[in-house]
Image 1: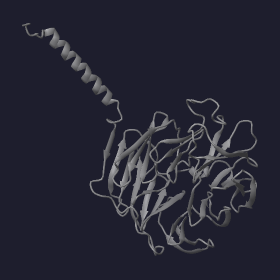
Image 2: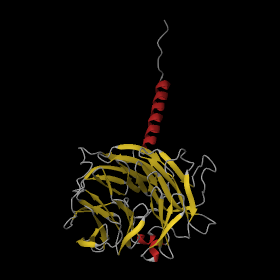
Image 3: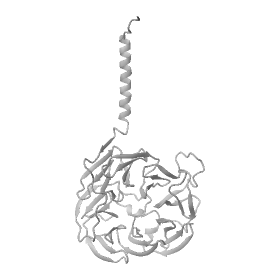
Image 4: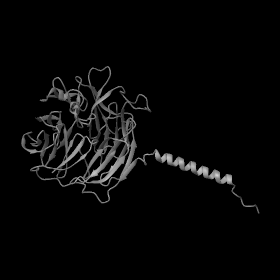
Amino acid sequence: MPAPERRSRGDVAAAALIAAIVLMAGTALWWGSDARSTSSRTAAAPGPETSLPEPTSPPASLRQVWRAPSAATPVPVVADGTVVTGDGGEVAGRDPWTGAVRWSYRRDVPLCTVGAGTGDVLAVHRDGGYCADVTGLDAADGARGAQRTGPLRPPTRLLSEGNLVAATGQRYLEVWRNDLVRTLQYGALPTPVKPGAQPRTGCSFGSVVVAPGLLGVIERCPGQRSDRLTVQQADPSDEDRPEVDFSTLLPGRGATLVAQSRDRSAVAMPDPARLVVLDGSGRVVAEHPLDVPAEDVRGEPTEHLLAGSSISTGGVVPTTSGAGVIYWFTGSSTVALGGPELRPLWSIPQTLGPGTLRAGRLLVPVPDGLAVVDTATGQQERLLPVDRGGYTGPVATASAGAILLEQRGATLVALR
């Protein structure tokens, strides 16, 4: 019978050294990992009703009920009965009535932007010079869901349509499904796998609009005198090989894509200010004069609004929609575009945003408060005074049941 093996002091020392190396390597990996720099606090109790009851009439008056810093939300974000704020590196789900934080998700890097998908909140954090880290959060309790990375450059904005979300960029953009699987890459891909698959890689992007199944983008390309409108499928069969419905040169520069439907595109053009409407093949079918200042429709989307505001347009024109009408904020006026033809119906001068619908009326932010507007005629019925404490910049609005939300620069304010 062989003698049992005995461990020498050298064996013990070697084993200890190996264990120490493994422990140090694990600690180093943890120290540099996302897990160490991330904290997630989910809701301890069920959230509010997924659809807050809508009021049957516009409010008689308004007062502030809470406010919170939210520099990463360019517009108020409401998802499944939860109001979402984003500031610094933290996303928070709040009670609409009190503003109390129900759940939070924090990283030690700043947010690029926050948006909403189908039942989820989408948080986009920086990674070096990119807006690369995207995390889906359940709107009800803040639980982490799908995650992805992507080579998006700031500034970027999220646009949601159905189960698709577009992430904008100045030279490259992406579209994702609600599970964050990418369906489209467009523009200057950082590491193209299929050379020649992208039609134009040297162009910069202006405004971007999503419609059911479609993505429209204004392109400004070297060597071309005019801007270009490209409309393509948002979910092509091959994510890095675009399926373009049409791409056409527009009558001049300074174009802004305002609205997109299945078979119409509405583009604002300067000098003179007018709205050019194209059909599904890229043919101009109508032109309408616009009674707005020339600078409202010249250049990037409302870029002149950004003075004094930390919010970037990210290529997104301020609009809201309802009952077949799109309400567009030009930078100084709110214009209603109606019907399948996207024809201008009326305009209201000296406004601060596109407004939000409440009980069949449009509540439009104006310098002294919110104007209650007849959606059929554009006539102001009355004014709801709102004290904004000296803030005079653009105002994006939304509703969470009986709560009205105003995004004023880097601050979200709840009114009731």
